Length: 131
Image 1: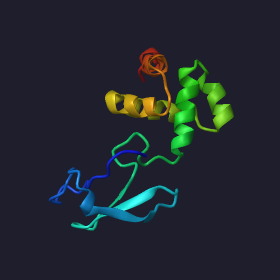
Image 2: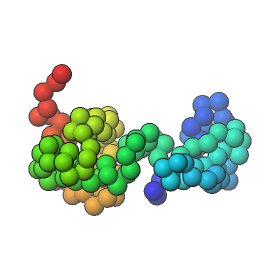
Image 3: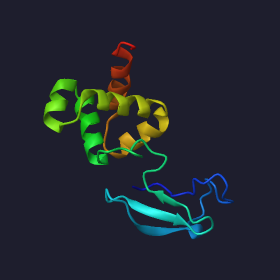
Image 4: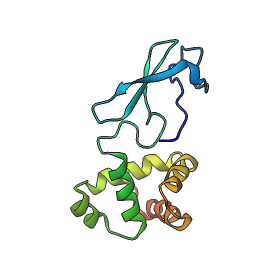
């Protein structure tokens, strides 16, 4: 990931401040995601904190591939079969991404999504019936 890492501890004086000197690498999570630690408050942060990939049981690559398939007019059923991810889970990811469309659109653009594909993803949500 190419995002800047910040401290997410609200009690820390460096909370959400870009201070490279206060954050250092601190190993990897069980999923292989880089972890960091704030030198001031000693709290650890993963590199996915604050993104649509944070706290997901699937890899960033799997989530992006599912979004790409959905944006290219594949049905949820076909994505379920090919990726072994339930359609409900994919919809939850998409709804969560839609909460912060500008950040999510930027991340998707970094993964070579065209503007047309991104708009088809948001349009897919609009077609869904509320439950």
